Structure formats: structure tokens, C-alpha cells
Length: 241
Image 1 (spheres, rainbow, N blue to C red):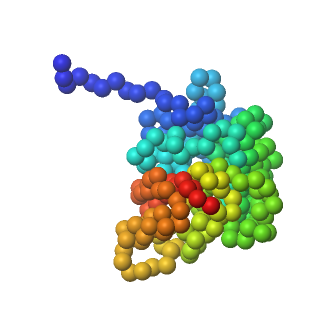
Image 2: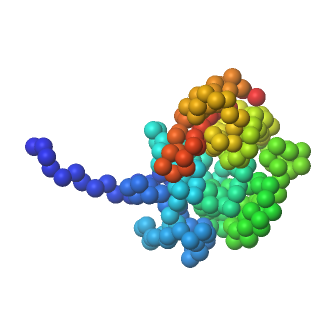
Image 3: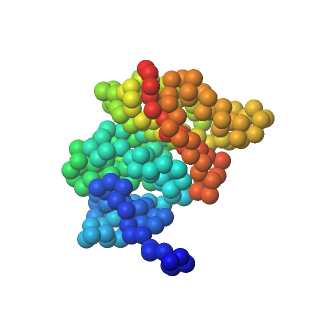
């Protein structure tokens, strides 16, 4: 028989620490009782979780916009990840919940690089209660100044740096820090790239061609419109050094 009411789906576990409840993401709070940026707190199965606001996180937005499984955009808990352009730490805080957990029970490591002293102060304050988070004051392009803090290549690299030459910066960082077969996430802001006059769609297509030419497999190009206009997030795999 047709025409019946559809049963509402319950929360889905994307990982041991991340829940998708209808169209809302939640991460298990590594510092119970504390919100980071005013986000809601809620318990699932007796464990406190923090709402991941997609309007303040390109990664959170991409997980809700992807055509693939949103879990594909998450490293395994305990992974080491390099994050370039950490900002005020919204995405960083949720990644820490996932990668490290309370007291860094998973043994993850999250190196968060940003050029702004104000952002570093906020990240340093966050790191005091979140072991495994390593704030770094530095220019994402100047690897020699802070690269010693990433002594071994990582399996995941995320870049969210709104400067001209974002693609070249990402490629250089991946060649320096990302293992072959590793996953790269590039958040790209169209307005920060050199304007060619061909329009935004052509610009985004050109970025994908650049990444392929540089030796990456583009898993998906995710449009973030509605959460972050004029942005795309590229999920790539490093095919060659």
C-alpha cells in the first residue's frame, strides 16, 4: 500500500564521536560542560555532544552538502592532521572532539596553523583543556618556520586560507607534509583567487584541473552555497609526491 507516512530516521553514527541527527551534526564533547563558541549541548545515549554549526565551519557545511557519505570527510579517531588556516577554532574544536576525545584518549594530534595572533591566543586557550591540539603561529606558506612541528608526514591535511594562490599553497603543503595516498581537503574562496573574467563556475572548474595536473585524484568538489556562498571544498587523494 502506498501513501503512508514515512518513518522518521533516528540519529546516525558517522563515527564513534560524530552523530548526524536529521540535518544536524554533533560531536561528542571532549570537555564536558563547556561550549566553545556558544553552540548547543545535547546528550545522546548519556554522552554530551556539541552542535557543529555549518554556517561557521566549511568542513561542517561540506559534510551536509556532500553527495557521498559524510563520514568520508572524517579521519579516523587517533589520526594526525595538519590544519592550515585554523582561524578562531570552530572546525578545530569539532575535529579535536573527533580525533582526540576527552583527555586525548584516542591519541590523535591536530596541528593548527594560523597567521593571526588573536586566533593563536584563542587556540592556545582551547588547547589548555584539549590535549593533542598544537596551536602554531605561522604563515601557511612558510614551511621552514614551523615544519619541525610536523616531523612525519600526515594522512590528512586541511587548508582554509583565503589568500590569492590558494591552490599553489595547497599543492606545496601536500607535497611537503601529506603521505602518498593521504587525503587533502581544500576550502577555496572564489573571491580570493585571481579573477580571470570567465565567471565563478569556470574558476572552480579550473581549480579542479590544476589539482589533477598536480597529481591529485579529485574525489569530490563540494559546493557550499547556502552555508558559505562563493566557496567550494575539494576532497582529493594524493596520488604522487
